[in-house]
Length: 455
Ligand SMILES: Cc1ncc(COP(=O)(O)O)c(C=O)c1O
Image (spheres, rainbow, N blue to C red):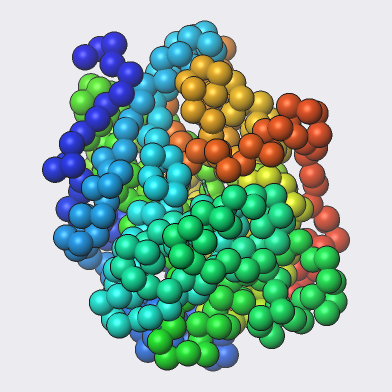
């Protein structure tokens, strides 16, 4: 076994429960507030947007939530995902470090996103919902929900951030193949989209704007709900199948991570791999260093204050305490579209506040450099988002080399980049530049943070 490359588990080993980190935290995350009253929201406040089963998962403190059999059954299409030992990358780096990666790109949509899309579609179907409206950045989430909609017979409409819509036309084709409708955001289909386009008809869009459009439509119809691909507790919860499987696979490999690295957009793939290990640590198990890697052009965890803010640009969502760049902040149009979100999951933000995790930010050319090195060694072309985790893992391995110590590094290769080849072509042609965010725009967005006395 010592020379294995892949650590595979059969379908019977798909987790039977999602793991809820909240049960093991030293202090609970701050409450979600109603935007009007600034009082904690109750389940009823969220009912126009989500089915009750998901709302209850949002607030539960139970440690384990049983995964419904129909969801596990669909998971069997691609789970258990493989854990790889990156032996060829280790050799290329000439590092004494041991590098492992969990590969979520084997899912139908090509990333971790179907783990929650299937679960969310299932609970919506159970509640009699006919249509789900959502946003998508890179298109991975939109494709995943489109797939889940096809599986459960639910109509799906996706608002895709304009810059990604233009960069990745085949993601739209994929969503349509699954039977979903995909519209570039900002659009003329909503009041919030119209307000943005009236000011700037060439607006590149942002996740915050696309969320506003989706929430606005969902709130208008009884038979329609909204779904979010990241950020919320229940989304992070569904992703914990990744870390639970990785724990069993690391055991197969006879190893345990010293360091875990994940990229962070809204925080869901990072949480998916990290939470089960962090829970183990909080219950008295081994300590793990945990590193979140984000884009330097949209650095919510490393540069954003920890404050109450809206999840969307038009201020239709409740207020959550999170690391945020301000809900009106529009990041530059860099290629990791899934990481262009102004905020960070409240749970991940809380962990940063408790010093249980570290955060780092990299510009995109350094990430693509790492992605190309990874592709040449391991054969898989990572998604631009995943390249942030690859960069973080490679840098940890290079530190091991410098210090002459062997550490075990585990990272989440959260998706493949097969629909992102324009970005790789631009990188190869030397056309990919590191973009700085606009300092004035950031200052303005932060000046607009709501003032909340509970802060
Ligand atoms: C491949 C991939 N990785 C990461 C992300 C970022 O989301 P999260 O931080 O929720 O994992 C996205 C979002 O679209 C994505 O498509």
